[in-house]
Amino acid sequence: MSKRILAAAFGAAFAFVATSAMAGTLDEVKKKGFVTCGVSQGLAGFSLPDDKGEWTGFDVDFCRSIAAAIFNDAKKVKFTPLSSQARFTALQSGEVDLLSRNTTWTMGRDTSLGLMFAGTTYYDGQGFMVKKSLNVKSALELSGASVCTQTGTTTEQNLADYFRSKNMKYEVVSFEKQADVDKAYESGRCDVYTTDQSGLYAVRLTLANPDDHVILPEIISKEPLALTVRQGDDVWFSVVKWVYFATVNAEELGVTSKNADEMLKSTNPEIQRLVGATDKFGEGIGLTNAWAYQAIKLVGNYGEIFERNLGPSTRLKIARGVNALWKNGGLQYGPPIR
Image 1 (cartoon, rainbow, N blue to C red):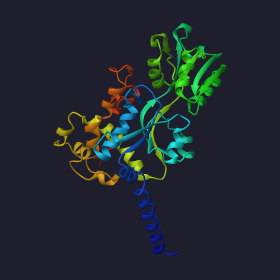
Image 2 (cartoon, rainbow, N blue to C red):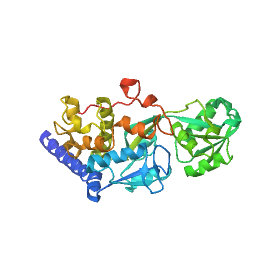
Image 3 (tube, rainbow, N blue to C red):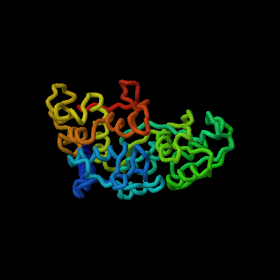
Image 4 (cartoon, helix red, strand yellow):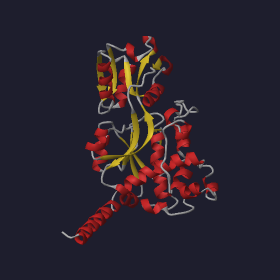
């Protein structure tokens, strides 16, 4: 086959793929008029409905940021609560457009489930919670303990790896629904509760007497919690990924929900590109050039989202730690918009 024919065939194939991608999730979202976002079944600080059914939380706000970028309306989101076992099937089947629900990015999930991870919104790690009355100060004192956890998560494997590596015995008490895990722990069916440490802080708040429980110091795993989409739709992947990166860049550049309008007049080239005052980066992801400005104006930058839902002024009182910006010693780092 000649080089000319090869080039023509490649060009046709590329055009087909590009057209297929453009006719994907973003177009469907625009057509139906809202984003369908898979969230947890209720995790304080991350995704939790109030008595009126209004969802709030760190994960919820990233869904709202995506809606704001697309529609200039942060309320155009339908939240679908999903268990750990049901979440991937719901995404694969198209029931939801993305997952924003304490989901760990792993190689197995990245390569065998037909998924793509669009950025780590929260760097976490698995920990342990016990009743203070047990007088346990370290996870190394847990040999022989019964441990409550949730099925269909990375938690089970991490638990087995940790106890095996320390030559300790344990009994696992597992449930599909988080609410059942919570009840089992509080009722005394197990000695220990294990999940991501952020989740432990959230669960402790729901217990009858939160101060009667302590979270042990050990972190036994890496749990990068990431926004998740289906494979095969590069345009939608780019939208979700770059909205998240925009919130991080906005914090670094000092662009907030309160000063976003003022920043439209900034002479800083980086800020001009972020808010869409110059260039046309929105076109590259199928949106208007105000996409990032809208997300920041209506929901906030990464720091605002963190502080509002998880930070020291909230009931969870979680420090930024490794989730601080890279220039402040953390891991949050947004590729440049240029």
